[in-house]
Length: 421
Image 1: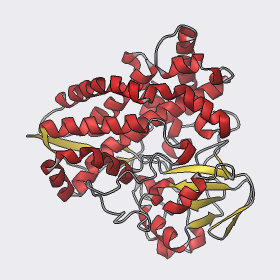
Image 2 (image 1 turned 30 degrees about the vertical axis):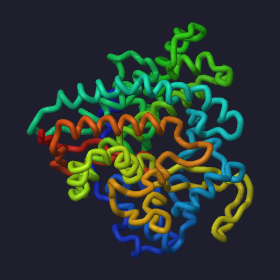
Image 3 (image 1 turned 120 degrees about the vertical axis):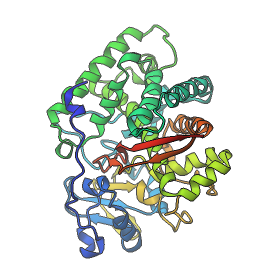
């Protein structure tokens, strides 16, 4: 795609945030600072907020004032009350630009409209279709793993994480195979913060309009032709999606791209890193590969690929004694809730045999629970089954380069070396 996307990978800077959150007043903490996420330095900030001020008001940030909800049970309380805490408008801490107001898709809708749009695309990830896709996922995972160099360092993100997830995205959209890497580029462009990512707003606008053009062409080709079970065909012929404007259609496509890309892609990389950081768990996995399905849930909790979701208060309300006003931004920090030891025992440990491993917030909760959660889990399970069948160790051999984003908690690069059985 455009050179803008490829050249936007940032170098790892020194953080402009204090490394010790106890050194600053509580009311000056701003956990939206992308430096904290790129440098993996946010953990003590959220630990302090969970302990001292779990419903925290930040008065000044690059995104304006906002509330941080950092404990597991408080996040659930907000998720379970969509009438008070609306998803409409934006699900990230930032707002859409007025000059390019892309809708975030049905994830930023409430009520029956959200439900009808969600139901329109759900057949792609329904159990019957997943059963059909499973052999294809395994075939592609094997092909990718068999192509990797033995004993040489390479980038796991590019060769494995991106390649597998992009291949499945292309299948779910029935997108031209030879152009599938555009899906990854468009996903990255969607979630980048231009002011902090080395790209301009114009770079982003041009790239995403290219995405819109491509998907409008596909929709015109498939509308009314009973093409099959793919996202584009279902949206083209869905009763609930006939009234979409161009930017609403783009927002829906981007939601499905990001949802299908980031959770799986970054959990694939995050799992390799977690096992290297916890060698006893890697040994446990070698001894008991039957733990893979449970480990997948633990990887997704541990990585938390999307760090937050935002709601907007529709009316004045109280939460943990704090007065929240209508119109306030309320940010649900999943990455903090997933490490809340008042809700998850030993939450700061990576345990592949964790009891109740599916108790996590990485897929959200309630009406907005991730529609593609099962295919994400299936891809991870199949990949790890095939990894363990042929490799003794996927060894991390250098520092990971993390994404500069307070929304996508992911990786640009993860250098590894593989050791065969």
